[in-house]
Image (cartoon, rainbow, N blue to C red):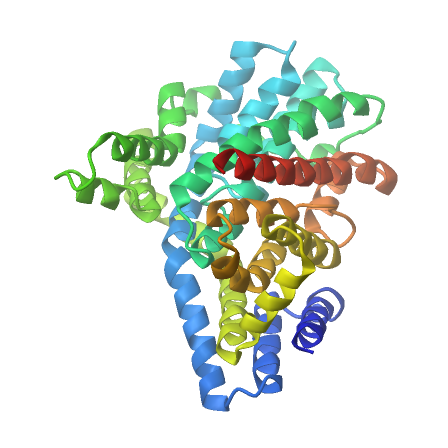
Length: 438
């Protein structure tokens, strides 16, 4: 009975967001309160669960998401992302243009959120298309596949960051495992599958191309790469040192402090403020304006995460989580596969990868303690499922269609299939890693 009521609640959530066009935060709150009342929570206990869910969830991810957004916005506006892409094309030339743009999307996609990265990289893709007379989809899909994988799999992007917090996973290990899975997923969905799409005729709309920053105004190559990837260097370096230093040694507390993703990102923002801001002639006020704009960009995402946290906590407080855990175990599927299926189902119904991942986490959380599934891999499994089968209810689908000026049929053949390949390869990678880790 509890499972049936939960499925009904999810259907109501999907209907409110996709059909009634209710803001996702309000939809989550309404469904959370409705679920709590249906399962017999007293009003006071219900609202306490909502407050705890919102506070705990945001408390764990707020710093990472906001600092990541600030760094990404500065990387974009300073021209560092453009410099990275231009440097890669200049180094590898056009013979391997698909692989070059894929690498650019991979590197730029680490600090940049998907929508920002998409709009930023489109002019680069179109300039290559017009300059070298190459098919637009063939050239652009590998770069956008890399962006999509970063968005679904790796912190500091919103959904993976929130999932790490909910499952009490290790963000550094999740990032490293995610990289191992992301690379084959991007290669297969990007350059390999992209080769089958050369025949798609696409005439990108000139109005969508933004003007490049003049080359003499761009930051240097070394500055661009180091400033953009500093959080990655810090986290990987600290993890390596933690493994090398004996447990209980005098350096362990300092390394544990630096291993906190919010600390690594804060240090990266401070460095980038100088290297990509003040060093390029920007005033402190101008850099702060960039950061303020970044916070506005992620505010709706933070609200969605808060609403998902409220629903999760209501399920826990009502006791239905324990019943769900028992019922899901009775299904007999491995928990990592089950997490992928739940996220994939919500994604197909709802469209939003972020909401699909967060909602699936609330459903799967009760099974973690009883199944002893690897929490780092569960984050990646749900992240992979949340990318499956992007279609008409996904804003990413329409962004790709309109920017590349494609028919619906060609968008399904290119974008939708690419996202599905990423999702399935991600699941296979998670299952292989789980087998390898024993």
